[in-house]
Image (cartoon, rainbow, N blue to C red; front, side, top):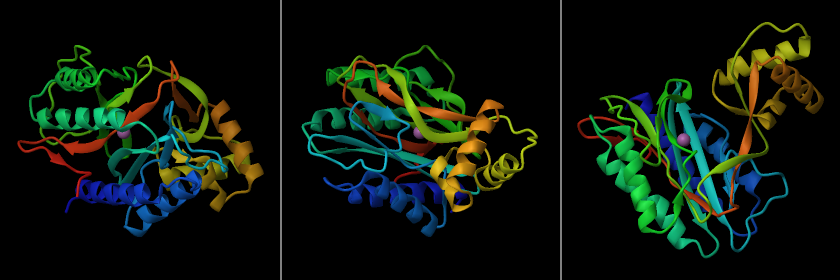
Length: 289
Ligand code: CO
């Protein structure tokens, strides 16, 4: 099995494991911690912090310590694993309310897009299929969220895989790894930035003078390279004070960036489905077991 296949299988197993832990009354952050531990046990590493985004929050969310799942919620779980930098990325939506149709819309859109994703398919065709399925359900697709190409140690590399016909005639090529991730919403179909997420990534490593900051940067480079990491992961090595101080300084120097939570602009409820594929004569769904 290649590292791409391995990471896909680990991401898939960790997603299912996490999905089964998501129950009304359970603590969201504890679920994320267990998923990340599971990824390690399976022989991978998290490709980015596992994320749980609830209701109108579409993505990039690590819930605060006191958040529990409640009746009425639509919960999105997004999990990525890597093996030697090869990344599998997948997501699923879980229903604690009246959201069956909304969840089915993003899942159907994903499946329809996967069916046509092969050598020579234009990116805009994938977007068009996703959008048409959403329209048939009378929901909006979120236009400013998209799927993405994946390369070693790069979660978002090269191609953007649109969720509507954006006119991009770029054709898929053999061996490309892409994630397709439609988001369906009852809202207006756009996200805006919300609160800081506690998720960071390295964008421009360079020398820093301060000792603490230099040590934190060294740790980030060694442990996560260019992959996104969570603020809380640093606490296995550093104190809260050191972490806050160093992250602030690294951000100010333009060395790291923090992601913002992404919230549906019309406060609509959002569902998401995602798989990672390897394009070929027979395209393989890497995150399916
Ligand atoms: Co993704």
